Length: 108
Image (cartoon, rainbow, N blue to C red; front, side, top):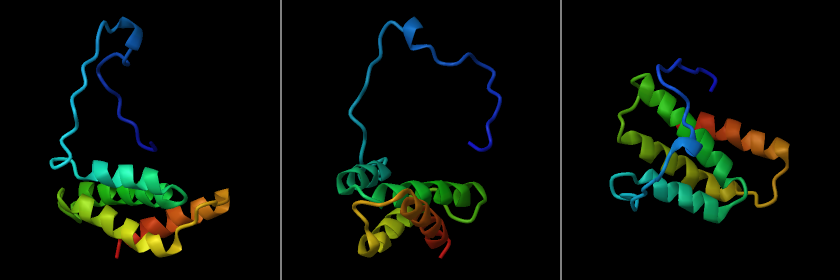
C-alpha cells in the first residue's frame, strides 16, 4: 500500500497448507528485528515512530538515496531522537503527528 503489484500466483491459503516450519530469526543478519521488539516493549508513540521511519527509509532505499545497510541506521536514529518526546498515552492526532515527524526526521 498504496502501490500494489499484480502477482502471478494465488493468494496464500493457510487451510490448504499441511504444515509450517519456523526457524529462530537471525538477529545479526536482520538487526531491525531488535528495533521492532524494542519499540513494542517501549510502547506509546515509539511504534508509530518506528513504522514511519521504516516506511520512509525503505522508500529512500528504493529511490537510491541510501544503501540497504543504511535502512537500519536511519530507523535507529529516528527512534533514538524520538525518545525525548515519547508519549505513553497518545491520542490519534498525536500518533499521526509522530508519524509525520518521523518521516521528516528520516530525511535529515
